[in-house]
Image (cartoon, rainbow, N blue to C red; front, side, top):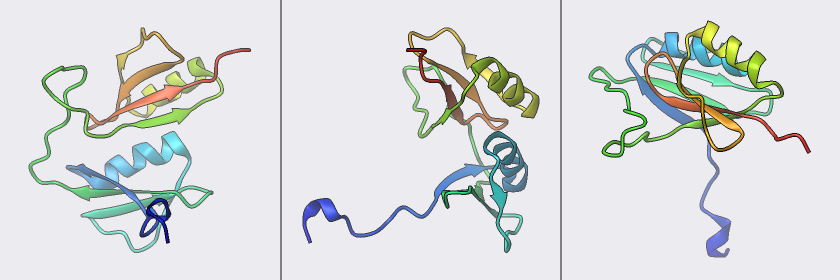
Length: 127
C-alpha cells in the first residue's frame, strides 16, 4: 500500500442544519436523489443513482456561513453541473434557494440553500 492508496472511501458528505428532513427535501428537489429508509428527525440521508450520499444532521445551535465575507468561511459548498443555467436557476429558486452572487467571472453562479449553505450551479461553456 502506498500513501496514495488512502485508508478508506468517502461514504457521505454531512451537513449540519436545524431541521434535517426539511433541508433534505430541498436537496432532493435540486439533485433528484432518493431518501434512504431508516431516517429519523435528527439524521436524514439522500442517495443519488450513482450511490453518492448526502446526509443532514441536527445542529441545535446552527449558524449559517456568511458568504461572501472575507472574515468568515463557507465551510463547504457543492458545485452542481447543469445543462441550462436559466432553467436550473429558476428551479433552484422555486425550491427555496437564494441567489448570492450571479455576476461571476466564470461559468457558475452562487446560491444559498434554505439554511444558508452555499452551492454553485455550474455549466460548461459553449465550445
